[in-house]
Structure formats: C-alpha cells, structure tokens
Length: 254
Image (tube, rainbow, N blue to C red; front, top):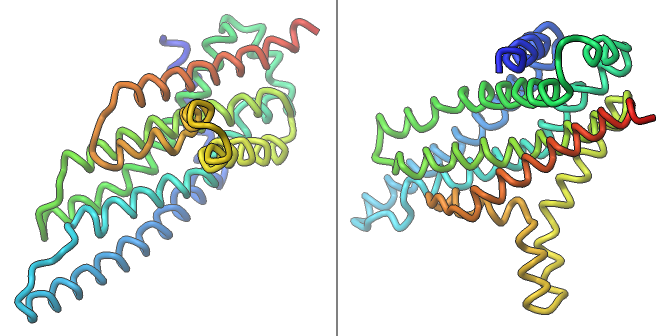
C-alpha cells in the first residue's frame, strides 16, 4: 500500500507541475460556478414571485438547483476525465520511463493502482471546490444534505469508472491525444447505450440498460444508495483496472 501511495502522490503532484491540473480545475469551477449562480438567481426570483402571489414554491431547493447542477457535473466529467487520464501511462511510454518503473521494486498491479488513485485524487480535489455550493444553500435555505452527500458519493463512483476506462486506453498507446479520444468515445458509448435499448425486446433491453453508467447514477441523484448500483460501479472499476494491468503486461509478453 505504501508503494501505491508513493506513486499516487508523485503523479498527483505532476498534475500541478504542468498547467493541466490548474486548467482542468479552474475551467470546471468557472463553468459550474456560473451555472450555480444562474440557477440560484432564477430560484430566488421565482421564490419572490410566489411569495408576492401568496403561493408556495412548487419546486424544492434540491430539485431546482442541486439535481440539475450535479447532473451537469457528471456531464462535464465526460470531457474532463479523458484529459486527466490520457497521460497516466501514455506519457511514461513516450518518455521511455515505463521500463524503469517495471524493472523497479514495484509490481504492475501497484503501478496501475497508484496511477488510478492519483487521477481519483485530482477528481476529488476538483469536486471539493464545489462544496461551497451546498454550504451556501444551507446558510440561506434548507437543502436535503443527505441527498447532496449521496450525489457526491455517486459522482466519485462514476468518476472512478471513467478513470478506469481512461487508464486502460492510456496503457495501450504512447500518444496522449489518441488515448483521450478513445476514452471519450468509450465513455460516450456507455452513456448512450441505454437509448438503443428501446430497439430490442424487454429482456435484451434490460441487459443493455444495465451496462449504461448513467442509468446507475440516477439512484444517487435521487438520494438513494442502491446496492446493485454500488456493485455495478465497483465491478466495472475493477474490470477496467484489470484491463489496464493486461495492457501494460502485454508489452512484456511481446
């Protein structure tokens, strides 16, 4: 575990040695911060109108701001995470440092776990910047904090799946752009696969829908932690890391 943490910490620092870490976090917070502000202003205006008319608000604070906002965060990660993962292994291959890592007292499994953890730490750091939103709502209103916690848990779990996909493609090439594009296409496919389910019979549609990463995120958005969704994300993530392991080891097999 110590070696995994050393790799993760080294890679996490590397994100901020280059501009990529600052660019990813600042761009993300700028976009999502603007969207939060716009939704909050709209909600306040609607609340004032409802008060003047003597009618209660039909939409809760969570439904009006939190749910759509955190759904948008998931969408943004579809674009951001390929940029984070594209360099994890591909850069090591390009710089020819992958051979040094594989011949050092570090196993391939530890290398994969460390790279994965570093990317997950960057995503968690990015998400930490959004904690200001629920705090602001809590000060001025009465949001469902339990639902917000569940959304953060869901975002971390689905992000881990995204990272495992990106790590796999990064393990197969030394070209970071190719790794990023293949990761984005793969994640987009996992998003839209649920839409194609309607073209099949109910049994086949259920199987296809099960592999939709966004379908399993819906429960978290509703504030529900369903064991089948947790198991799906954990299984998906482990399988992605296994494929990354195979991708790196295939160089030795050759």
